[in-house]
Image: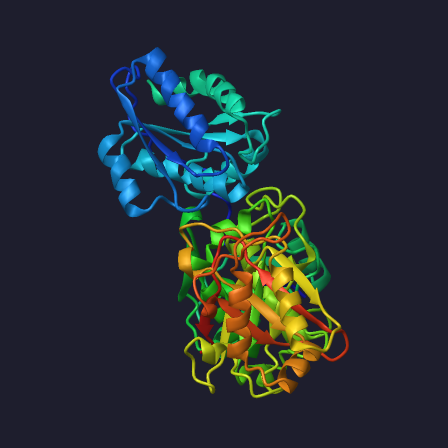
Amino acid sequence: MALITLDPTNGAFGSSATIAMAPRPATLAGQTLGIIANGLGQSEIMFDALAAELTKWDDLAGSVKVVKPSVSVPPWPEQWTHIIDNATVAVTGFGGCGSCSTRSMRDAIDLEAAGIPAVCVVHIALVPAVQALCKLVGAPDYPFVVVDYPYNPTGVWSADECNAMAAQVIDAVRIRLTA
Amino acid sequence: MSLSSDTLTHEGYPEAVETYFAKGWTDGLPVIPPTAEAVAATLAAAGLEAGEVLGAVPTRDVTVTAEKAAVNAVMAGCLPEYFPVVVASVRALLQPLANCHSTTATLAGAAHAVIVNGPVRQQLDIVGGQACMGPGFRSNATIGRALRLVIRNVCRTVPGVLDRASFSWPLRYSFCFAENEEYSDWTPLHVLHGYARGDSAVTVMSVLRLLQATEFAPESEAILETISETGRLYGMPIDSFVGDARGVVVVIGTEHHRRLLDDGWTKEAVRDTLFERMTKPTAGKYDKQVILAAPDNILIVAAGGPGIAQSQLIMPHLAAPTHELVR
């Protein structure tokens, strides 16, 4: 006799894009870089180095940065307003903790929805998680920037490593933030 | 009752069980195939409509309805009458300060403890005495498992995907126990947190570490010092999101409870003394300050059975203990 049972999930992971990406500027010259740092380890130092490099090579106008109240939560409302009001392009991350990386990915997607071109920097160890998050929230093909080993995933980096990672990701960040 | 879940048709019970494995909908153990009749009975036991929203995980765009919680409760092996406790547990988990996204996706692999207070413990045989943290008790096992299946199937915390736990741990199968309110006249946990004695309530606590504080000396002073030292072994993670709401749970075992009662200790006095000792400044790598805002942030629970002179400390991930009335 047939047995009929119920699906315990909210349905299949989404695969169709429902979130549009914000329009990109042609170059980063004159843009203000928003940084939403998750605060894990030395992520702030890495982003400061990245902002310095982009200012040096791309004529970035400046940067604004917030460090979230916890590694896996959205920015406080006033932090969000600060970024939205001042940034014209943005980066989020970096380092995880699976929940940290996925939340940083969500921050980037929320920035896109607010009209600010954004990119999340992700460690390769957390790629399956951020891809799943992207599918869940309707951005299955949303691009991101990946940092590989030998850098550890959890933000415990020396200052030299932070600088090296900034140099490593700068081209990919530039490509993701411009048309 | 109108249910909205997609349906699956199987040739029989064994095929249904295997299908749920194949679809990745179990915790690695067999589940009870959730029929519409069983789910409807489960919802009815809590007086809930299928579409009632119990909470959400905003980062994931996930909403948890009563229907989905009921489907997973049936799968976990819950009797319908357990469902009000499952519902309260889900609601507590989805309170913002429980930080569900963080505590269920972290590399650290945090688990969640469900601590039950009030008359519902006896009505449902939720055990708070001998061996209460382990296997052997249907209500404890299935209520805790139901919460984990909701975390997996509805909140999408799948190992290797959104669940990034490097090791994970056995407490993630199920972790539910009751306070042993009958052992003494100590004030039950839920009463200390504003509920009436006749209410039933759950406390959901993220579990980064479960630490055993073993002290065979009979003196209360030694027992409290050992509990404090145990909590201070690693300290606890802090952030400004959880802020002053962060807390720890200290489960006072029966042998320690007995000694403390002999010396006239109330739960409130134990709490205040532990607060003073646990929050002292850090003195070394394995003597770290447990940063808490107030004595109330130490949640004292009486549980366990006679035998080992031991208490248990439940140290949190980046989340606060949250409470919900069992309705």
